[in-house]
Each structure stands twice: as structure tokens, then as C-alpha cells.
Amino acid sequence: MPRFDRLATLYLSFPLTCFLGPRQRTRVPILMYHSISDYLFGMSHPYYHINTLPEVFSQQMRWLRNRGYRAVDLAEAWAGLEVGDDLSKTVVLTFDDGYRDFYTEALEVLKQCGFTATIFLTTDRIRNTPARIEGVEYLTWSEVRELHAAGMRFGSHTVTHADLRSLALDQLEYEVGHSKEIIEQKLGVPVDSFSYPFAFPEEDKDFMRYLEDLLNNLGFEYGVSTILGRASRKSNRFFLPRLPVNNWDDISMLRAKVEGGYDWLHWPQLLKKVMFHHATIMQQSPKAI
Image 1: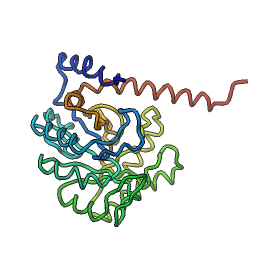
Image 2 (image 1 turned 120 degrees about the horizontal axis):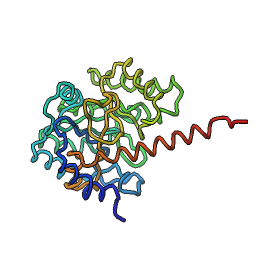
Image 3 (image 1 turned 180 degrees about the vertical axis):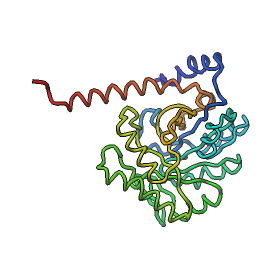
Image 4 (image 1 turned 135 degrees about the vertical axis):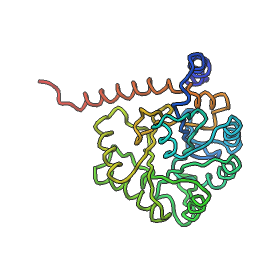
């Protein structure tokens, strides 16, 4: 069955974006990867797959390199957005969770392309020997240190990959703050970036304000989310939008994503979130007598 998001992107949104002349220089695509492997994680619909085959990942990275893109970290990307630099050939590469296949499959490709990346670690799963959880291995601390020495950056992805909005406030602070402390202890450098686990609740403004204050107070400078789209100067630096990439993204789809043709999907997704959020509030409210 054809994917509606793919058809709408390639045959409607992206051509229209190209025709209208997208503001490429004031936007930065932050690509969201997870596992560079053939492991499917039990997912069925292609949109939700979080794996990318090594050969597909290599093709994607080489296309970016051949198109003149340079990969930067979040700090450089945000600094460029703030001052209005030309960022039309800038990309940020992020990898959530800390899967070991980054070390075994992605690192060499990134080195060959001259790219850097940021890996967001779920620290309870990073141990002295490879932890195998639900069929997949995670990085070890020695591999994390080796990757750091090779120029990769690291950020926090909580301690246990918990659904933060469901936690008590003290648990939430522990998940966010303790993971930062652990990575800083292991690497001996400050950790300034955070990746929100699971779908980001952008419809819950009260939660967003609380989390933003918490991240700021804990010393974070930047954060990424699952909000769809490219980052701009107007984005909240603690909840920067990203573009999910997986094994189903051929070069035509990757190009559409990094050049603005996929940004449209944020609005129907936000509408769905808002409607569900309001419906939940109504169900929880006492019935009028």
C-alpha cells in the first residue's frame, strides 16, 4: 500500500516548495536516525521504522556529501540561525538511543564523508560490556569514549527512555538530570544537548514550559524533539524540530526532506495532537450537573 506522506511529499508538496522558492538559507534540517541495521524493532508501518540498512545509510551520506552539505553540531547550527548565516548546505545528524551499530556501521561512513554527528544516550543501557535489550545491542562506555575522541558529540536521552509526561516531577528531573551527570562523568566534558524520548507533546503548553525551565536550570543549551520540520530562528532551541530518516527513504525522499518538501506534515500531526489532547481533557473534567 503506497504511503500517503510519500506521495503527497514527492508529487505535491516538494514540487510546490521548489516552485515557490523555499527559504533554504534560513532553515537547517536536523536528521533523526536510530539504528543502522536490518533489525525492525517490531514495527510494521514503514513510517514508524527506526532502522536504516548500512548500505542505504551509506548512500544517503554520500549523496549529502556530493551535494555539498556539511554536517555540524547543534551549537554551530543554532549560532548560524541566530545571526542569519547562509545555511542552505548545512545539516545536523542525530542518532537516538545509543545503539552499538553506530560504532560498527555508521562511524566509518561518517569519517569517509567528513561528517560529525550527535548521539543521544539512554544511559541505563550504556554499560561496560554491550547490553542486549529487546534483541539489539547498545554502545559500551569504552566505545563512547572512542567515538568522542573521533569527533562525535553526545547528549542526554534520559536514564531509562521513560515517557516523561507520565512521571512525577522528581522522577522527571532524575531522568533528565542524572543522565546528563553520568555522561559528563564518563567523558569529562559538559553535556549541553537533550533529545526528548517518544512523540513530543507540543500540544501540552504547560508541560513544555515546565520542561523548558528544567532543561535550562540543569544547564542544557539545546534540545531536539520529534516535531516535524526543519529548524529555524523561530524554533524553540530546547525543542528543535527534526526529520525522521529510515530505510524507506530513497534519495528522492531524502532530498525532499532536507529541502523543505516534508515540512507540511507537521501541521496535520499537530492538529491530531491538539484534538486528542482536548478530548482527553474533556473526558477527565467533572461532568456539569
